[in-house]
Length: 442
Image (cartoon, rainbow, N blue to C red; front, side, top):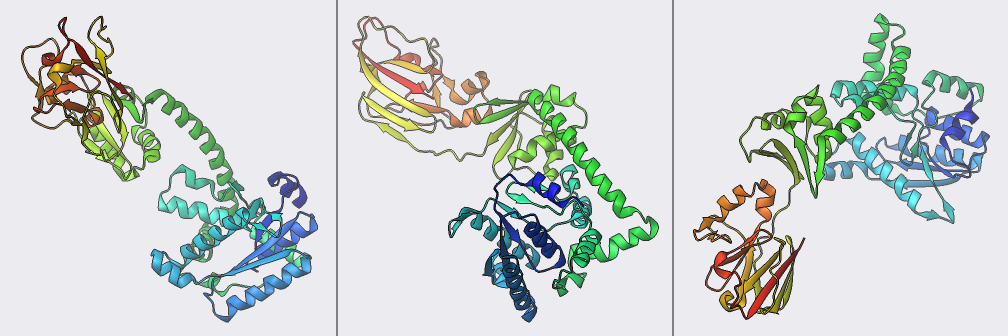
C-alpha cells in the first residue's frame, strides 16, 4: 500500500497534525504511519469515563504509545453522562460533540509554541460504508451517500481508502499492539447493528456487497458533483435576489422538472425542512399573501412570484420630530429633515424626497408604521384614500407593506407615505415661504 503517497495527497507541506487516538487498532495504525512517514504530529486522547477502568486503561495505553513514538501527548477528561443529560443527547452524540469541540479548540490554541493545522481521525472504508447505509435509511438524500469524506474543513481521514481487513493485516505484520473497546460489541448502538447484523446478512446473499457498496460510494460522489453543478445552474436561472429578499417566478418554476427536488435544494438554505416542500408547492396556487415559515424565513405568495424573505420582527417604534432640522435612523432608513426657503425652491422629482409647506405642517411630527384605517389625500387627488388600498395599487409585496412608514402631524393628519407620496393638502405652492424638505436614504 502506498501509504506515504496517500498521506501526502491529504497534507500540505510542513503541516503539524493533531491525531485523534483512542487506542483501538485503527488509530494505532494511523499513529504508526505518521511516525514512519515522519509527518509532525501530536497525539490527543479523550477519556469519556463511560467504561470504568477500561477507559483509564485506554488512557494509559495511548500515553505510552505517544511516548514510544516521541509524539507530544494531550489528554482531556469529560463527564459525558452529565453533558448528555444537560443537552438531551445520546451518549454517543454527546461524546462526538465534546470530542470535536475539544479538537477544534486545540487547533486554535498554541500548545507550547506548536501550531496545529489539521485534525486526523482513523475512519476507514468500512466506517464510510456504514455511514452511507445509515444515511440512506435515514433519508438524508444524495449528499449522505458519499459516506465519510477524506477531507472536510480541518479534518482529514488518511485511512478512508482502506478496509479494516487491510489495516488489521498491516497491524499484525508490523507487530503493533492495541486495546479493544468492549462497547463496540454491543448492538444497541446503530452503527454496531449495521456492522454486526445488517452487513453480514447482506453478504450471505451478495458476497461482494461490501466491495460493491464501496464502489457505489465513489460513483455517488461523482454523481453528487454533477448534481450540485446542475442545481447551481438552476438556482441562477430561477432565484433572483432583491435586497434581503429572494424571488422565485412561478411560471418558470412550473416548467422545471422534478419541482419537489429542486424546491428542496433551494429552500433548505433558508431553514425549511423537506416536510415543508409540499406546502411551498401548494403556495403556487394559493391566494395573494399566503405564506409558510421556517425558523428564519417566510415564503410568501405575491402575484406570480414566491418571495423568500427574512423573518424580521418589525420594531413598531414611534419617532417624534420636534423641529425642522433633525436626522432619524430607523429600520426603514435614515430620515433627514431640513427647512428651506420657499423662494425659487425646485420641487424634487424623487419619491424619496418630500417637500411640504412648513406653515401647514404643525409640529411635533410623528413617524410611525402605518396601520389599518389610516388614510390620506394622495398628491393630485381631492378625494381621500386608505393607505391599505394605496399600497395595493403600488403593487407592493407583503414584506414591503410591513416596512412602510407614514409621517403624521400634531393634528393626526398623514403628511407623507414615506418614500412614495405626499398628501395633497400639504404640498408647496407659489405662496409658500418656507419648505420642510424630508429625504429618505434607504
